[in-house]
Amino acid sequence: MPSVLVALEAGVLRVTLNRPEKLNAFNPEMHQELRAALQRAANEAEVRCVLLTGAGRAFCAGQDLSERDVSPGAAPIDLSVSLGSHYNPLVRRMRELAKPIVCAVNGVAAGAGANIALACDLVLAARSASFVQAFSRIGLVPDSGGTWFLPRLVGSARAMGLALLAGKLSAEDAAAWGLVWKVLDDAKLMEEALELSKTLAEGPTKGYGLTKKALNASFSNSLDAQLELERDLQREAGHSEDYREGVTAFKEKRAPRFKGK
Ligand code: LHQ
Image: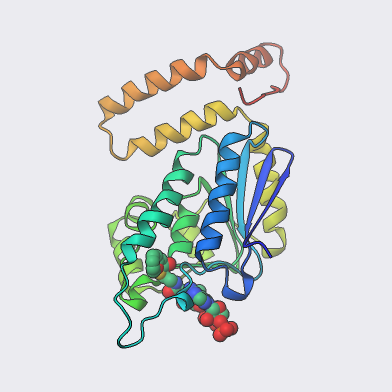
């Protein structure tokens, strides 16, 4: 059974974390299969949007804790190896993918699972979903970009509370705090996530990629540097076929037919 299910439909690459008996916790196979799926999304022009979700009742419980031997006498584990070879490249790949990534958080998102959800571009959460910065429960530091995303999304006070106390944040609170885009009734989550993803897949993919680049860069740029970046990215967007189509459609008072080029 694959650890990640991948299906392409109407320009949307649906990627489903598929270890439901472990609440979709990450092991090396799942990392490898997710990496391949994102590589496919980057390489194939037919893929215009990625939709990431989880199978079963959880989105993802972070690292698979059953894989580590922490018994007395066991050799010390260097967790930086796992971050360096798996989680950090994953988060970079997601942020650098020049196509939108929608996340449908179908249940609990804990540890690295929570932060991988936050690394997506538009996060939808089922009403029954929750977010847990579980790391401090096992003596660890939030990783997978958590210490970067959280203060930017919810401010320092809430970021610190989430990280130190490792409480369960409900989907409703996550939306009220600005951590996610929308909360949807459980029964509607996948339908609406797919609809949103299909809408994005019909959009100006190149422009979306450049927009992602601009917003991601904004946190570390001065206003001056960001204005320069916008100028450069707009030059690129202005050379796209979709820009011509967008303006032509506007003048002809019709809906644009973007090709993602
Ligand atoms: C699991 C897991 C799990 C294995 C539930 N592993 N089995 C990066 C680099 C290197 C190393 C370290 O970590 C990292 C990043 C990280 O992600 S660190 C954080 C790792 N994740 C956690 O600490 C979360 C652990 N899980 C939980 O706190 C709870 O399971 C949550 C809050 C996710 C869900 O709680 P419940 O809904 O009450 O479910 P449960 O606890 O009963 O779990 C159901 C089953 O899933 C259970 O197995 P069982 O055989 O008893 O039914 C759990 O053992 C298993 N499971 N998470 N991460």
